[in-house]
Structures are given as structure tokens and as C-alpha cells.
Image (cartoon, rainbow, N blue to C red; front, side, top):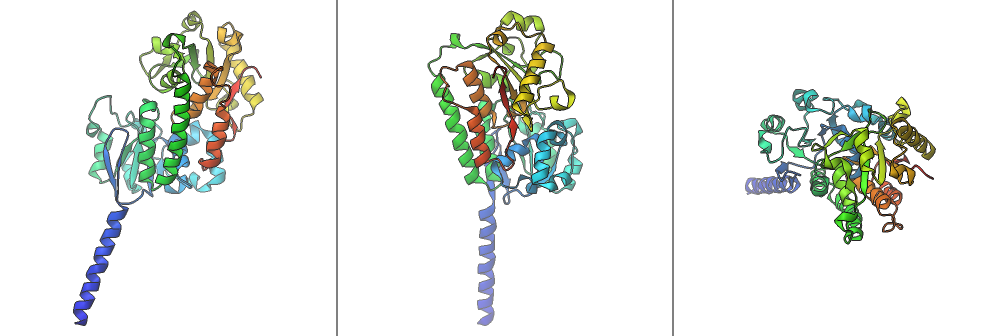
Length: 376
């Protein structure tokens, strides 16, 4: 009798244990519509592009603790932001590097040796073209063969379509659904507000905009073409002059072309590298407003852009480039909308939106100057 009772108890415990494991299992849908299964919330994540640590910082209270490996780009290309993370989370210095931010430098073998439970990448990193079957990607097949879930996210190529699905998938995979849904609610409300205010603006009344990408750090003049910033410019009620001639995500516009289009709004972008090189836009973490404004003046002079209507009429601005590959593009869009249609957005402040996101979500707040006007 006692043996039968003990056996029954053991069976019940086994069933309860199995139920608990199954309850922790997670199935999510990524930006490509792929179904991904995890045995439990991810605790060992590999970021193939380390810039996305700031996306994790929106969704997780300790993003560094869940990183098993990453590329070196956050430390090198976003060194100011990296220092902020290093001060808050010293362990970030010990995260193994598995490549740069490009697929040709990424080591699948090194990544597998770190025993990740989730790999996060983009379609372009995985070599997946538009309309192509994701399972044709070599890197996805390699991880799949090893039993490692791979999630595809996108805040860059089609940001308007893929931001919310990417956020939701990440939040679910990390076991941070409540925090993620709260951020999605904020993001969606701000995006809807912009769209509502611009709903009655005719297509032929969208002013021409020149976004000077990585201004000053390259020869004149890099510009968005399709997707990314171009989608954001259109969403904010403007027309990207680069989209008329560039059929790639980014490209270069000639000085003559820019002048012939007479853009009404000029926006320079940078990541803060100008503070080191004295050539690019000094903006972002640790930058002062005077630093940013003086560097913007220097860029305009160096590239002979002072004759543009946007400069003559005072509609000239600088903004942090890293808003682009992130759901923080909502800040970029609000700033753009206020510069393109000031009469419709006089009561909207992109800076206040950043302040709210800093306070409510970002584990490591963005502290510095992230947007600036040429004229005070």
C-alpha cells in the first residue's frame, strides 16, 4: 500500500513538473512571420548587431545580464553610449565578441560555443532578400541544425511595418511582455498622433527634405534612398529628395543635385563621432547644445550648403543618427514633423517624448543633446 502511494505521489510530481516546464515554453512570431519556440524566457542572447542593446534596454531592466555574446560595433561605433552602459553595468566589458556588425565577420562556431538560447539578427544580416524564403539563409540553417532559436527583427528596412512585431517578439522571448506592451502603447499613441495631424495634408503640399546622413564624416553628401529615414520623412509629412534618384537604402547625392532641388528643410545626422574627429556632427550622449550647434555650422560651411533655402530660412537642424535602427525613431519622426509642419505641431516636443522614454523605460537613459536647431 505504501509503495503504491509513493508511486502515485512520484507520478503526480512528475506530471506537475512537466506541466510547469510546458507553461514556461514560449512561441513567438518574428518580423518575417516565422514561428520560433523557446523552452523558457531567453537568458543567453547573442546580438549579431550590438546596436540593438538599446532596444533590449527598453524592454529589460538588466539587458547586459542576458547577453551571451555580441558584435563589437556598440563599443566602437557608439563609444559614448557604451561608456554610459559600462558605468551602469561594468560586466558589459566582459561580453564575448563574435564578430563585427557584418555577416562576413560573424563566427557561428564562436557563437555556438557560448551556448546561447536565442540569436537575434536582421534579414539583411542573414542574407535574406525581399520575398526570399528565410530557411535559405545559411546562418539560420546552421543555428537551426544546432537547435538554437533564431529571431529576425527589423527597425531599419521597413520600420513602419516591422517595429511593433519586432518589439512584441523580443518582449515575449525575454519574458518581459508587460513592460514591452506598455512601451508599444506609448509608441503607437505618439505615431497615431502624428498621422492624425497630417491626415488632411495634400500630397502636393509635402515640403522637400534633405537628410544629410553621417554629415561631415564623409564627402558630400550621403542621403537616405528607400526605406529607413525615407519612410520616416514621408510619415512626418515631407518628401525625401534622395528617394527620387536613389533606389537603394542609402546613397550619395551630388552637390549640384541638392542645390537644384532647393530643399525646404535640412537635417544633418551623426552619432557623436565628430567629437573625436572634429568633422562630423557632435551630438548624442555627453554633447552640449552649443557643441552640437557649432558642429552643425561647421558642416554647412565645409559642404558649401549655406545657399540652400532651408539654411537661409532657418529650417536647419541636427539629430542623432542612431534613432534610425530602433523604435526610438518615434522621436526622430516627431522632431521631423515639427520642423516640416510647425503650424501643426507647435504643442509637440520630441525632447519631452525622449524624457518620458528615459524615465519610464530606458534602463540606461540617453543623456546629452540628441537634436538641435541651427538658430537658437
